[in-house]
Length: 561
Image (cartoon, rainbow, N blue to C red):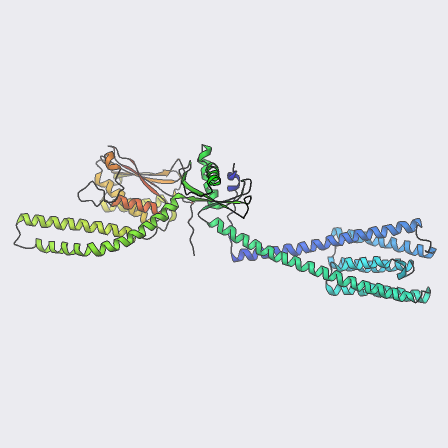
């Protein structure tokens, strides 16, 4: 249904910065100048093709002497020679335009001079302004003014008008033009100036419209880059589908999820496409977005929701894919915040009276009037007061714990330092702690201090129950279901019954009289705060095996500045 894997693998991780925008603007400015020059060359080419047609046509008509009978033999020869020269010059200009041997401005100016000279000769051969060839001069000036600035357009009109006036004066002096020829020449000059002004206004409006469109295009491109940058940085997977349910946009988070699921999905319904398709049809049927977790083949749990873009029902569809682990982490942080407020009340209501009880018990033990039985009872009070105080300290530690600051780092060097410190504190030999390393560098993503706290709890519990060598075995690798890094802590103790294993992560559950029952609970809470998981894989007679499954090291969290 949804070929996301092809699009997801080619998602661009774009970044937006001031220097990037400046570079984009410079590139667009250069392209605009190049495009403007290209447009000018194209316009000059079309005008010159028109010039070739006119010159070729009159050369042919003059050569065949297919001109009106009002043309004398001299007029025919003048028109034919002028048209031939005009045609030759136009061919030369076409070569220059095609090879771009000069600047567009120089070529345009040369075309105007050529047109004015040639068409004035045509007009003279036909009997002056009354002959009808003046309209060709108007067309030539209009074409030149469309690709020229305001002052250049007026200059072209003035040049053409001056040429018409000179031709009229010459005709009046030597060819007995009538007095009306001056009126006709004046009207033609006015038409030339009016055409130049009108063409300049139209060209200026076209240039302003082009500049406005260019500015809007730059603003739109900047906005597009900004939107893409925001979408790519979102932790939630974003997919935009068209009316035919084909992906038109996939952000980095969704692309990563698609890549991971395609590596491990063996059944269509457990792939990301299958999950989206099923959720989509349910959404269409009910019209409601239900935050139901979907379990993928890779083991990841996601929630899928949909939003219709636009007012109609045939527009694009926005798909949100959220990691259920992140949602659980946010809920966990809210729970810890509430627990923090609760522990403040516990500290105020219990710790102060407990301190008084403990202090009174210590004073009572020192009394010489106590017999051994009373002294023993007093000692029990002191011990249990200390135990309650330890419970309060642990609960307060949960409530006051800061949010996890996860970072990616190599596990083996960090674990070497941890094992060295563990051996020094418990006076262990190298044989008492065995290690199994994965091939290559294994990177994990977690808060270092919280990982240290979790491992201290697990290792000290393991050392307490271990009976033979090695007392502890630490093994790391990559999980087969999702390629996530893991760390296993295995002890050599007697294991535990299944009834006990079911409750070891519950708060205040302990199998020892002196335990608080919060160690493993705190360890799991710390793991979940880092999008990791802590599970008991084995608890048989050969010892207990705990697995710490880390979050994927490439998963980035969005930081709001």
